[in-house]
Length: 287
Length: 312
Image 1 (cartoon, each protein chain N blue to C red):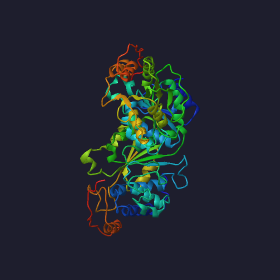
Image 2 (spheres, each protein chain N blue to C red):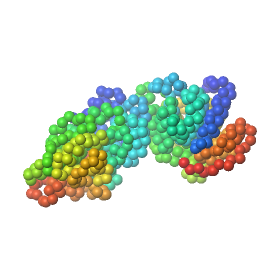
Image 3 (cartoon, rainbow over the protein chains, first blue to last red):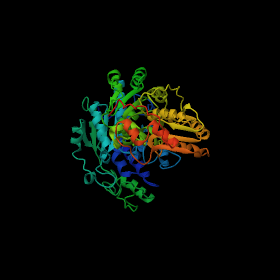
Image 4 (cartoon, chains in turn orange, yellow):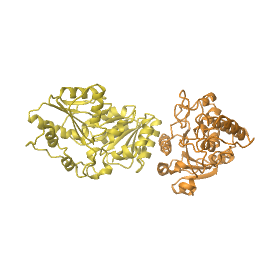
């Protein structure tokens, strides 16, 4: 295994900046803060270390592909794009503006977004099609699809696993942001998913389950790509919904958040470990 | 040339083409051996097939996908709309046994709202050829257009020699002052029968094979409705959303009106049986069509209707 190529401390610093962007997007209409914070480390790692994607190769058929199927975590992606130079930082201020395209779900008006999402269970199959084409052409590009754990309620996720296994797509990686929550409650209180590792294994995938907030663990897992010749790769990344903000971590009622400006300032301090925020804004905002 | 021959020839001569199916192989039996890894069978997963087709189209491919009409247009509807429609990708839907062609299968397999659903998707194009020759005439342009396309596959033979397909144009078979029948797909063969019977009764009869339902030939609709005493819309589709609705939309858009007799399935599924029996039971044989237009019975003889060669 090669060492992490990013200089020590840089991934952590980037992830912290991305979390700041996410918090700043959680006001004036709000966003899906919890799901974005759980996926932030994962997305930062993939774009910084693993994927051959940069602002100069976005149209290159030999680039890697990342599909964000869970969609709600797009603020983490936009924040990462801003930090890695794919998107001007100033554009993040346009969140929900009719003059830009930065809204609650990914869309291809933003350079680097390969496909729109929002309707769950779609992008596993789109990623599957891309991976098949790469196989046909004999390419070596990697294809990642990030799914939410709640998203796994959708049957089409499992169809895609079946078909990917049948077509031996070891160039395809399904990453599950296993933050234990779906919209309104814990996944295990609604439609239990465990034992998740066993389910994917039984469907023919090569599976790794890791701490999705540890860059070392992420690096160890993705360095082992392809996990097994001829098998779909699955990474179950155990994460915490709301990671970085103890006042909303693992809270079922903090799915979509529209904070007021005082809360945002306090949450930014909380992110840096200064104190715990007294949240006053409405909970359980339904989107 | 057959559908399968045309598809094989097209795919072999153009690397962009990928032939896909959700385990509906009736139309593509011989293609796997010829196309190798450019033939992809995703199993009984219509939704996943469409998503994967969108992914392939993202990479510059032209996927021609096969599934039964009801599952392609309805089970996979949101995937078609979201993954092919929104990004306007050239995913080509070959819809097997649409309309009355599902004959004995029953209502689960009756795609008689497919035209309505598919034409409601922005960027989508919608076609319904009259027979296999018409199908093969139309497909090269359909497959080469940059949009997603939905084609009601109809591989039945008729005796009619079709003209060259022009994009967005209907095929005017004849013009008539008394009645003009507008139709598409399978019922074209019964319309030909009806037209002969009506002519024998002394009427001046027009017949238009719509071919393309989106884009639709508005001028053909306007000409027919304004030059005929009666316009008949004939379709194996629900009354809602199909050709009758299209005619209404075109007339209203142009501030016109007309006397229109719709022959369609009004708020009902059809009785499952072999195709000839279905047509007879539901009143869609050429003779029954002619008699509905005339308003009286005739002594004309309905030619035998062949049973489809496919069943699924």
